Image (tube, rainbow, N blue to C red):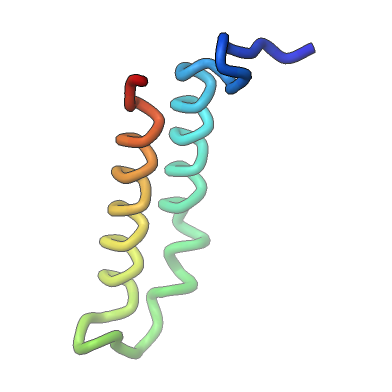
Length: 69
C-alpha cells in the first residue's frame, strides 16, 4: 500500500521526485530536437518557446507541490 499523508495525498517528497523526473523528460535532448525545426510562434523560435513554456510549467508545479496548507 503506498504511503499517504493525513489528507490522503502522497507526501511532498514523492511529488517533488515526480516533478524532477518530469523535468528530466521535458528537457531530454531527443524531445528538444522535435522543437529544433524551422518555424516561429509569435516571432519566437519554436525551441525557445518550448523551453520557456516547459520551464514555466516546472516552476508552477514546484510551487504547487511545495505549498503548505
